[in-house]
Amino acid sequence: MTERTTYLDPDRRDPSSRRIGVRAFRWYAKVELDRDGYVDAVASRGQDSGLPAAYEEAVERARLACIERIRCDGYPGEFWFVGGPRWVTLYVQFPHVEAVVAALRLAEIDHDYGELHALADRLALPVDDWLAPGERELIRGIDFDAPPHAFLRFLRGKAKKYGVRLNGRATAGSVWVRPTLPSAQKQIREMFPAQHPGWVDRWTGYVEADDAPFRPWVGGRDQDLSYGATPVQFRPAETPTGNACPCGMSLKDLSDGGKAHNAHHVAWAFGIRAPKNLEWWSDLAVVTTQSPIAWRKLAYKVARMPQRENHYDFPSWSHLGEPEVTPHNVRAYLLQANGCVIGYLTAHDFNEHRRWDLIDGSRYGEEDDALRPRIDLVWVADAYRRQGVGATLVHALADDFGCQVADVSWSSPISDAGRSLARRLSPEGIWVS
Image (cartoon, rainbow, N blue to C red; front, side, top):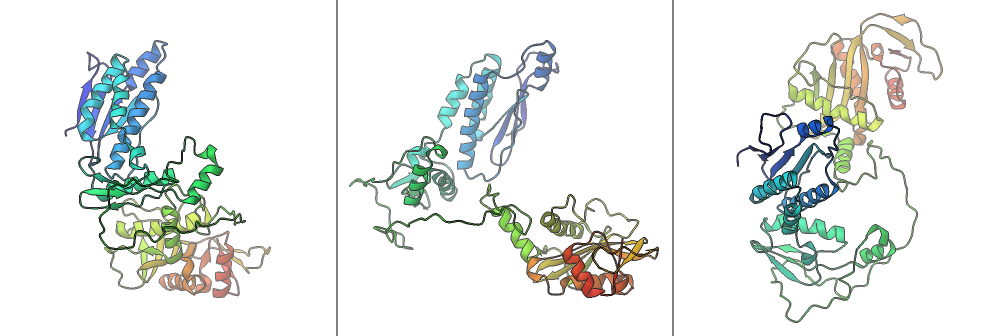
């Protein structure tokens, strides 16, 4: 399908001309009605440029039906569109592009929204029928068109919203399902009806008909291990209500099922997985602002860990453009173990420092203008903390510069963990800047 534009007004050169654009993507086509110039022209005449409520309702129904169809095909991504009267966007399967274009033209020019409603009715999925109680076989090409495993994954998501256990299995050309209602889900929905409006229990007490289809046995787990089992009992209990995780992410953000938090927490605990396209000739790599972009991207990825953990406004490494020479020799030290970057230190050279004896409340000493390596930030993966990783990084910085560890400068303010590290390395005091 080629990208094309359909004009709805006679003078297509007029900036206020309305147009419908069609653009193909891998999973769907994007059909977008451009009313941007038209809205400005109408507003300049003092008229109402908003979409009628009936128009918005028809578009929303059609949009939801089209998106459900695409997700049923197995599309895992998100859909983005701009609200308001300037743009009307629909994501549709390729066979329905022409019908959507015609329905939008009719709604925009003739104010007839019947075709949009008819399209929504025609594309609406019979989810209620698919999740009705009883054993059934849904056949590819008749009940659905997606690959069976993708369709089964879609059905599982729908069943979860209903609170239903699907008991499904995909075969070469069909999907077998037997929806049942767990007692816990039934109890939850009966206790909180306001959170589940319109929910009706169709599954409890259902008796399979004598002529119900028989699911062929293909081996594997016994299908009736829970038959006649006693429901699990639940009791009220007090649980920790803290919202913050030590890794820096929220414990309550489960919009994606907790996948983002789990992935971030694993990286925070064990380190950032080192890309396979980078060859580590030794365990410690020194990345500068002139290093290849793959190394600078890795340094940035690691820098995001302490940023999120400590809620900094900006990451400590941001050199992702073209290679450049920085005035103060900015560099990052990456320590690798077990295929992951477990330690990170970023530093630059500076010549304004003061001596500090590491005693709380004590004043800084006189200013020193010697050029010293200045530690901007040290971070160690959680599983490797208190094992000398931070000390290894500081020693590497001092050796690289050609000075003693006691001559290294530390950026102020210093965190409690940084102060503890500094005391171990330089008990007589440190330079700060």
